[in-house]
Image 1: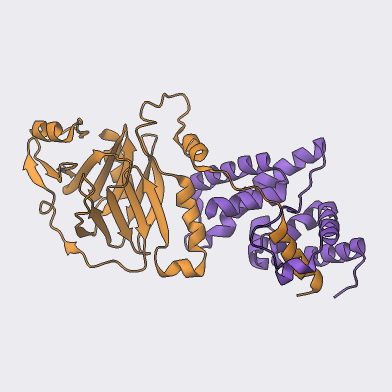
Image 2: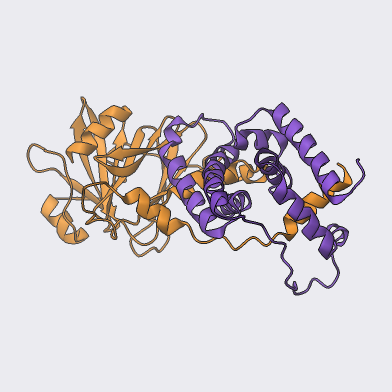
Amino acid sequence: MSELELRLLALGHELDVPVAPDLAPAVRARLEERPGRPFPWRRAAALALAVLVVAVGVAFAVPQARTAVLRWFHLGGVSVERVESLPPGVERTKAVGLGRPMTRMQAEQLLGFRLALPPLEGNPTVYVLDGSLATVIVRAYGRPILLSQFRSPQVEALKKLAVDKTTIEPVQVDGRPGLWLEGGPHTLTYLSRDLSFRQRTVLIHGNVLVWVREGVTLRLEGKLTRAQALSIGRRI
Amino acid sequence: MHQGIAFRTAYLLSGSAADAEEAAQDGFVKAYRALGRFRRGAPLRPWLLRIVANEARNRRRSALRRERLALRVAVEDRPGDAVPSPEAALLAGEQRELLLAAVERLPEDQRGTVVCRYFLELSEEETANVLRIRRGTVKSRLARGLERLRTEIGEEGP
């Protein structure tokens, strides 16, 4: 490298560049905009931020960042973290580990919010874990699908770890921002409502759709295609 | 970190903090909406910076029609920096200002390439990606830009 090139490199370090402002609030607000419709859920939904979605990709491009966490995706009360290998997890059959079974009314009293469900026959059993995460098993496209929901807290309550085989992409569910996770096993780690770090890790082999609606984070899990999951999501 | 590099890129290419903030914001929003088209496995940083850089350069073109913008060298005392680094020592005040002014006077295509390569310290390949030009074009623009800078500041060639 010539002397002039070295001087230019040094000059780059000396430039008076203002401190970068926090772009997140403005970017978040713009991503939440839905033309022609009001945003009653806007404050409640702790929607995460494309800045993180994209930007952690910047970290991804840095070789030393590859060794641990590669990418983060935040949405509502969920964070998705891409890692090189998954921690040991417990295989789970659908109804085991979902929590205490109860009626819909009991669950709504315990959770403090009205459950969002697709049209169902009869009274579904609702499984509630740690007083905060409600799950219903619905049948769609001839197979069981897990529909889980919880009020989006200020901090993340669910954490997903995904390896590189998992595709993660932003989607829209009825105009609301969501994430679609497909392929490859990933883990789901729960934190209890009081954030006392009672974690349990289960391995998930199905695909997952996560989105936020009116302050509640919803997730569908099962052997669904993206189109099928979005179709169910729109009917909830 | 991501916000930092995006803002820095936008600022150095546009020369204005306000334009840089808008350009970086627009860049993130556009990048988010275009994520579905992003080729999996491709490096993300140049892709993101390309969008931000494009926004910044568009703003600079508009701004240049109104007024001449210029970057500044930081002259404030830096606490705890009593001993200048070897790099900083190379650039005593006046020389730095001269060099920066010469960079500012470069034709737009050469200036953008010099900014990416030296001020942002992108590789040639990343520079090509960010500016949407071929790597050979990066090399030729840099060669022409450096030659012009040498003439302007009265320095001998390498």
